[in-house]
Image 1 (cartoon, rainbow, N blue to C red):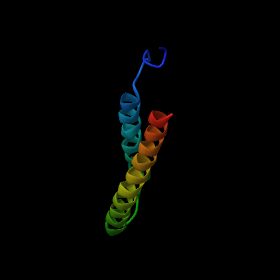
Image 2 (image 1 turned 180 degrees about the horizontal axis):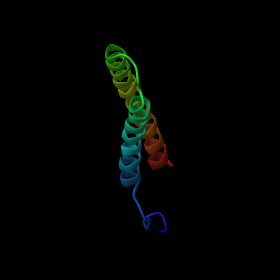
Image 3 (image 1 turned 90 degrees about the vertical axis):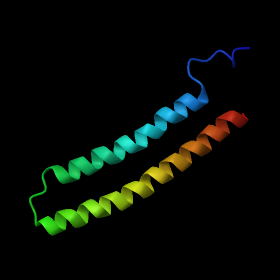
Image 4 (image 1 turned 30 degrees about the vertical axis):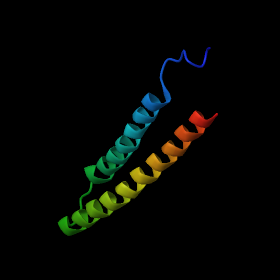
Length: 75
């Protein structure tokens, strides 16, 4: 009976946590690019590298969150 009465459902929590992965990547990219006093070509290269790594990071975090959500539903 108490299982049905919850403050947030698993889907709501998973959606909020998936936004967290995008926020972490955005903050990291901004922090690295904020005070970069170097050659413009190096700045562009670093930004492109961050974009690629950010996509992989967001994918892996969302994949792990999906696994956690499935484990909670199965128990």
